[in-house]
Length: 182
Image (cartoon, rainbow, N blue to C red; front, side):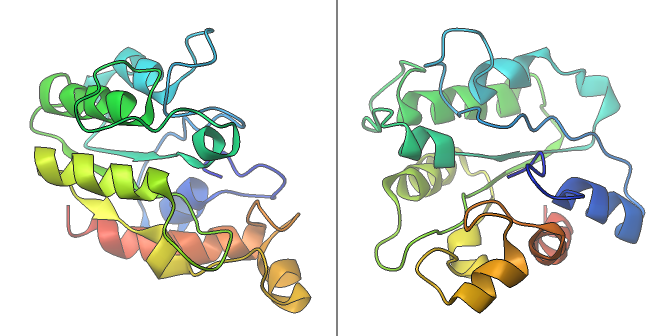
């Protein structure tokens, strides 16, 4: 979602263009919060490699690929980065150590089905609350796309899952407002 998969732009670029932020988008299609892929591209691993001197705000938006690929959610006691809870705790520790003094936060995955909040979103909120890290709940802010009318899906997504340029612009407006609160 962050990379702008299938869209002509992404929310990071829209924010930078419209609100005069400078920014780097480290989103990679298909990656996860967790270190389950074995190739070092989990967000919990990648966030440790970025140059902390070149950023003022760090946000992590992820979890849908963990959910859709059946990654173990785990519990608040987990420290194994192969679980969602363990990866989130690892990211929070990186926020508090490597990015100490920077504005950091989580953006939950978008909601793609009606009904209950996903276990990944619940985990993000629980871990972030424990570490006192802000969360933008895109499940609530953006609404859901899958199982919506075809007109809505067509207007805001490229495939019923990934936001198109209009969907990315809508995300950008909500995220830009939230960034001011960090």
